[in-house]
Amino acid sequence: MPALTNAAEFTVSEIANAVKRTVEDEFGHVRVRGEISGFRGQHSSGHAYFTLKDEGAALDAVVWKGTWPKLAFKPEEGLEVIATGRLTTFPRSSKYQIVIEQIEPAGAGALMALLEERRKKLLGEGLFAADRKRALPYLPRVIGVITSPTGAVIRDILHRIADRFPSHVLVWPVRVQGDTCAPEVTAAIEGFNALPLGGAIPRPDILIVARGGGSIEDLWGFNEESVVRAVANSAIPVITAVGHETDTTLVDYASDHRAPTPTAAAEAAVPVRAERIGHVDDLGGRLRHGMRRVGGEARDRLRAASRGLPKPQNLVGVPRQRLDLAATALVTALRHAGQKKRIGLGEVAPRLTPGLLSRQWRDLSQKLGRLAERHRDGARLGLERRDRALERLAARLTPQRLQGDIRHSGERLDRQAERLLGAFRRGLERRRERVEGGYKVLKSVGYRETLRRGFAVVHRAEGGIVQMAGEVGAGEALRIEFADGELTATAGVGTGMPNPAAPVVQTRKKKPSGNDDGQESLF
Image (cartoon, rainbow, N blue to C red):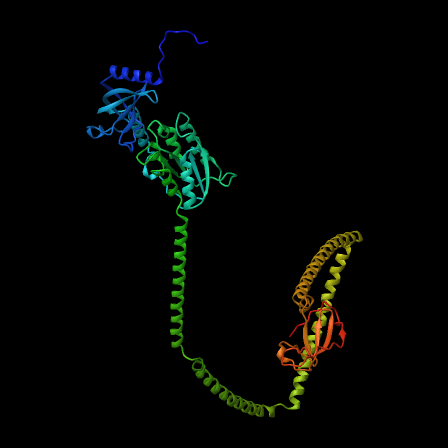
């Protein structure tokens, strides 16, 4: 049973309208000082929506389409302004807002002042210097993307890369706004740089740091010093695409390339594959055309040079004539030389008498005898010296010493014999392997291997091999060689074609003689 009460009941709309009237009556005309945040220009409807804020609170603001042209000063993101208007409520969402009628600038906002101060500090350290920026790799194999895994940004990047030049993409998921944004982005950049080359996870050749648009507060994580220093110190080239085209953060100054949108970042990272293929094809066509042109020019020059060369018979004609003249002169010179020697021998012949030869023989015999005596005397003296030396050595040669020398010599001989035997066996084994390899090659290329695969060789009865059917006459005796033997046959009637009316007659089957593995030539 419901409790009894005298309190009046109100609907939600009644309460919302009552609050609206109260606020409008109490704050019919106000001037509010605050920093503009979240301004993105006019809406498609012509109205403008943004927020006025200070360090303690935020107030929604709206400029109606009809009021916008009358504003002497247009709102800009991050500026501190004094807005004149009236407070009202939006009953549908139970929010209150100021409807602005006039705006006056009040100086740069606190966030913009902090941002400018931080920009000047990092600029003084040289983090934004142009000479620090590196060229982007022409065709990266691995692309590292640092962004939120759930937004539209990652889908746009992956789709654009797949359309232009499909590559291996590694995504490092991070929060792209809030208190944890800066630490996570810094850790992602340093993590990618810490990956070893050739490791299980491939090290990216280029990094893309991206997120969608938002207010200056939403993008503030990309203005933190830790993120800017991580981008500046990255050993991997970095492309930044933070916010929309009009948004600029400090990481954009430190990066190697700033893209206005995430899609533009993907386009800057990889070229268009179809264009590259077409360019390579064009270069290949130009190269082939140039080679043909150079070859044609060289061929023309060679032909022109060959026409200027003398004929071979002209080159050897004169030397051949000189050779003929020299041959004729040689015959005459030999005949004259023979006559001169004959005349000289005739002049010497009278002096060659038997008595002269006898005297020379006796002189030579006496000289030889004297030399023989000297030789015998020298041999006797040498033998005596060797006998004396041998006697001295014999005194020092004892059986024990000889036995030791014999033993050492035997040991050396045994070692040499073992080495010689091992070398002989190795050499024999190498020769056996070469012989076996040669035998296998000979066996594989021999025509008998072809016969074993179902082929046959047709021989004439008187010898020779039949290569064409047209070479065989009707009734000619043939010998057909197979892998397992031979058959004799008689050719049918016809010119080069078998006659079905005259079948081949088998007369005998003969086993091949000799070793079946022997290789013979077909020709």
